[in-house]
Length: 268
Image (cartoon, rainbow, N blue to C red; front, side, top):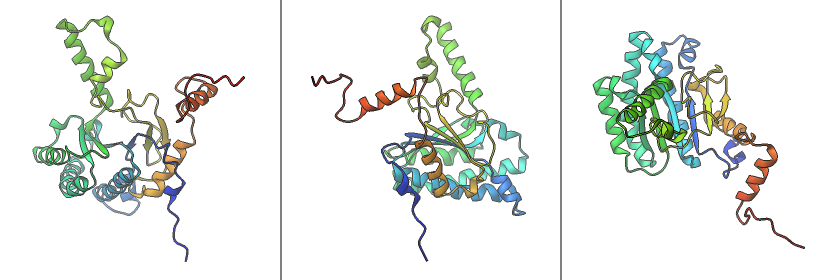
């Protein structure tokens, strides 16, 4: 019997995205199809988090941002919210040693103060334990929404203007970006949403302005290494133009190659 081929061999290791963001959708439906409680679907989804984090680290991807719990998710039944909070705390406690071993650094984005105290303590312990790591940066979005983030950024900028620290005429895109939760982190090159929905649900709205979007019907608990590689291969088959023409992109890529510069050589 032939062994299953490792699909990572198909990847161009020189054209991997630097930053991948994922909306992890489908845990509840995965559980419902198996006559399980929704909380069991969330628990199974943790296995996918572990798989994708490990593979991202192995591939050398620098940033992985996971939408774990949105501001809107507080509206879910209290029993489900409580189960999710317990799962988040338990997962961080359990996985932190492996994250340290694999040189993965935890970052926390969102209204962390809204989380239960015990969960906050677990998260902060994990963040501190991995603070020295220099490999994959794992951004965990909890009680996060992009509108919340942009509203807070606007308030901070307004306070600086009121205090005379900033002129309205000097507000630029960089000014806004510097006030976001992701300040200092490159924007996502690739945004993946699992579970078959085709929307980005208030997630990194500013940061994903030029991200490549990839939607898959695969439910998050079933999102394995092959499914992730499929998304990366799809990304590598796209041309990112950022408003330019294909010819301009081709020239830019040529000039960026080692041994090439922007000055034409006259061979006559």
